[in-house]
Length: 231
Image (cartoon, rainbow, N blue to C red):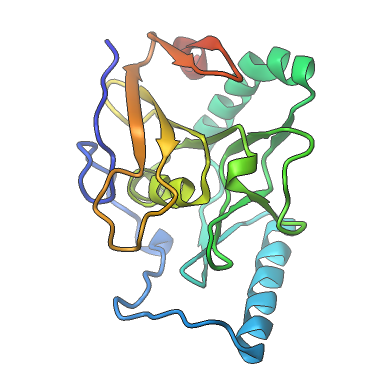
């Protein structure tokens, strides 16, 4: 049975897995106030992006959250298998439409240099790039996050908020740690969210349990057979 429910930061009904000490992301100071960047700030931002690129090239998952570099755990074997199964389901559409699958490009989170690295990004060939590392969120077609013990809380509590601000039209969150396993589709993002905004980041949230079909709207226009993701 499909469920529709909110997933806003700190107000979702998913109980996140306990975060491991070495995967705790740094949080911004509550009083952080971003002014227009000066020359020194621009130099710092360039160095930060370059550091992320270097870490990602070396095989790490480096993101920027509120101006700080956060290195996440490598993708688990289970998560890798789920992404592979999902890619298989979407390949006919990819080939028919000339889309691209990205596993190592980030979604830019405006208005600063922040970005998130999804487990899978589907984008058209002419998607608008910010630079060699980042794509504009509203140029993507679908962003996918697969929950693992080290990332589950961030996947549910932080990333929907960031992706909505970026204008990502469709966010798919696959949660193999839930009991029962779930697949959630979020659509209609709110791009004007403030840092302390308590609105839901996406207007539409539909969750199905493993084994139930999940409708992906246009430009996909298919029903996703979710049991295949967990085989």
